[in-house]
Length: 157
Image (cartoon, rainbow, N blue to C red; front, side):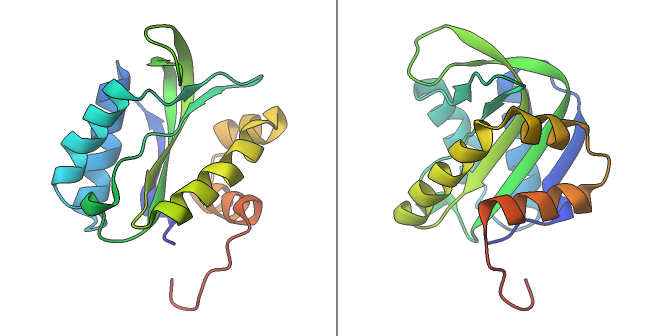
């Protein structure tokens, strides 16, 4: 599982959910983590299956797409300068202003489900979301998330 400082984007300026998603997916593609097809696939999936989640603190979104577009498992995190509206998961058009985006690049369905469940636990803690949203250090964001997600990193990752 890859989560490093290169995949944590701070003070992202985007005017729409799609722009934020394209920016993050483009970064994953540039780093060789996903195939070029991932970019359109994740934009399309977000259009059809929205991932905005209203929370007590900052709303979050968890865009993801099918495993055939993924080369290496990774999580990318974007902290937006100003929130952008994402359609709420399970809704047709109702939106929530999202400040934190957790983009998943998973190459196995079961690991994606497990990761989503762990992320959902984090999203219920508004103190954690608030600290992530205001943390200046990408290293601290990475370390906090790894600890919260309880990932055992193998040597060399």
